[in-house]
Image (cartoon, rainbow, N blue to C red; front, side):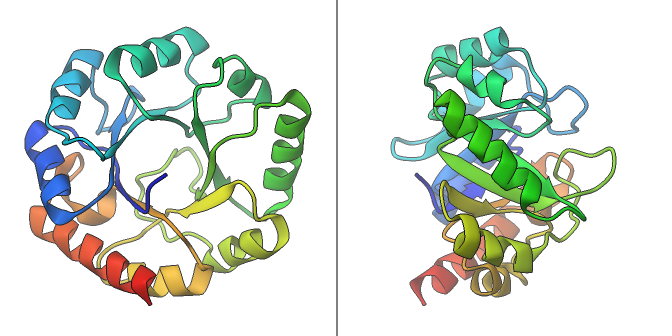
Length: 218
């Protein structure tokens, strides 16, 4: 669905910078505790600046079903990113809307991921993508903490489907190494290309996209 997603975009200016750099997905965050949180109205203006062909993602943490469905439908989103502790039943309630389910890898490794996906299969609500992020107690992403690249590589070998997106502490200087180590086919970054929380650095965005593209091409 995408290969390079820039998440936590909070302005039309930053959305245009992502497009100029060649990123192919933009994430808008609706988690109230995040410094990157935007309202539905703000998201509408941000996404209006996104040219056709770029995947539009809404990021939620333990949200109720109705507001997620409303955001997806009213904003014309392409993907719902569930980044909290949502049970498989929550995915089933979304009426077939495509989902990327995030998992924060901790000491238990991939076992909780495999168990969760099996429950989704039984409910016939398998997510379109799986995002593997770093685990930081009390946080739900955007921390800058580097993820477990070795576990991500095992995901591809041992689980394999749905397709995996790599996140967690990525930035222009390490994204190529992360792609090689994890065998990632897609990456997701927020804090690693920012001047300050929620404000993107256009030069860093361009450098990140360039490094990731070169790594994917190899």
